[in-house]
Image (cartoon, rainbow, N blue to C red; front, top):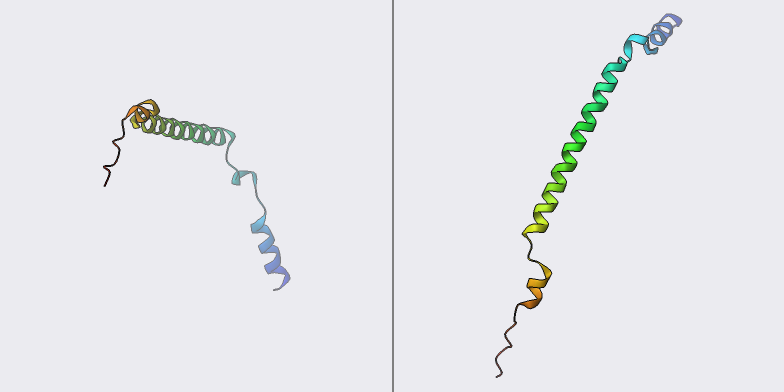
Length: 72
């Protein structure tokens, strides 16, 4: 690689101010991530609540009579 190729390679690896997102775009992305995370957490909590409400209570499981096995 000659000196000219090296200089052009170095010029393409430097970042200008135009390569970075604007602060308002960063803030909007942060808010969108927070909103999505909040939605996922609320959905997970709703699912967990539904699962626990569908299960029979421990008291009901304990009071159920068990028939003894017939003697042979």
